[in-house]
Length: 140
Image 1 (cartoon, rainbow, N blue to C red):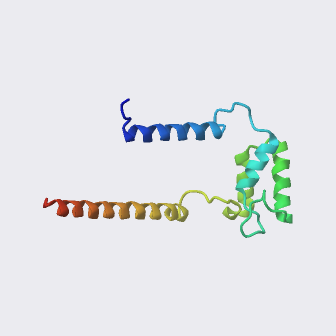
Image 2 (image 1 turned 90 degrees about the horizontal axis):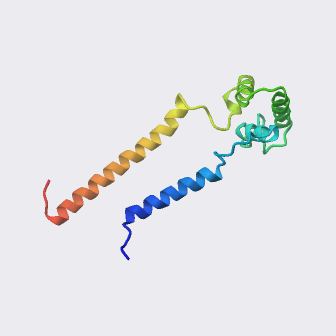
Image 3 (image 1 turned 30 degrees about the vertical axis):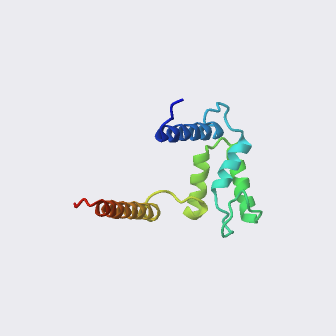
């Protein structure tokens, strides 16, 4: 029996992982979410207006209960999820969102660490390459 190359094993593992994640995420599920599921999804993305670090779904404060009632009322009125979130954002500002919108300063807070990691990996790779050349007697 021939030995399977390592890179093929890794590719099979990645494919298996991607397929598992896709199936587990129910991305291929054709049934539309119920109003309760939509409400839970919206509430999980909104920050409690009077709490420090809880979502509306996690909090039992009066302000979270008011936001839940607002979400339920507008879902029953036929509003889309995006319309409800925009209305709450207009009312409370970006502070109501657990995940801030991408752009401006928040985009820099994500991009700078990633760029820093890429630069560090490039420096380490360059250093390792030089060390290997020196140890093998090859000069650049």
